[in-house]
Length: 164
Ligand SMILES: Nc1ncnc2c1ncn2[C@@H]1O[C@H](COP(=O)(O)OP(=O)(O)OP(=O)(O)O)[C@@H](O)[C@H]1O
Ligand SMILES: Nc1nc2c(c(=O)[nH]1)N=C(CO)CN2
Image 1 (spheres, rainbow, N blue to C red):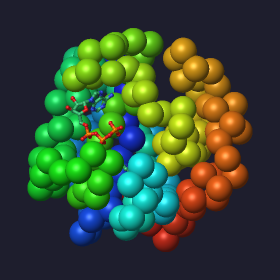
Image 2: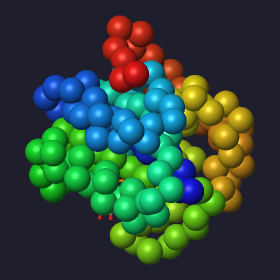
Image 3: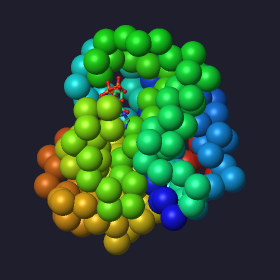
């Protein structure tokens, strides 16, 4: 069994359409998908707001590298070009965790090292797995409580949008 948590983000073009494309690509293995959140950009702040979501997928046939390739295929399908680090993109798929796998290979860091600092990942993930623990870091709820209020306020549910 290989259960992965994927973080999806888009801030260019048909943002919801790109997120939907990524979810549709894994729909046969989809365990849960969060709501869609409008989020203030971190990293490079002078760029459009993102739509973010998190999904949980499970496929006994796939290991963590296969999940990375699946995410990269979805990014290519969204016409993503290699641009500025933390800059605007049609689609970003980050592999947040795969089972309890720890990896320090720069091609696939697990858990994804940005996770504890990113309310745009923690909030949607908590929505679908309130008791989740980030391996090596602790319960998501505790990690989110450590974020400044301004980070949490920058992640706003869009009830008018859905990936389910
Ligand atoms: N857990 C992971 N999920 C996705 N890509 C990863 C992961 N760990 C390492 N990478 C590598 O990161 C590179 C892609 O980085 P990308 O341009 O998406 O970074 P970013 O989204 O700008 O920044 P960040 O990774 O901090 O979110 C790829 O080469 C990929 O192999
Ligand atoms: N709110 C938010 N900000 C970002 C995001 C993202 O997904 N959401 N992704 C980035 C590139 O990795 C850079 N900044």
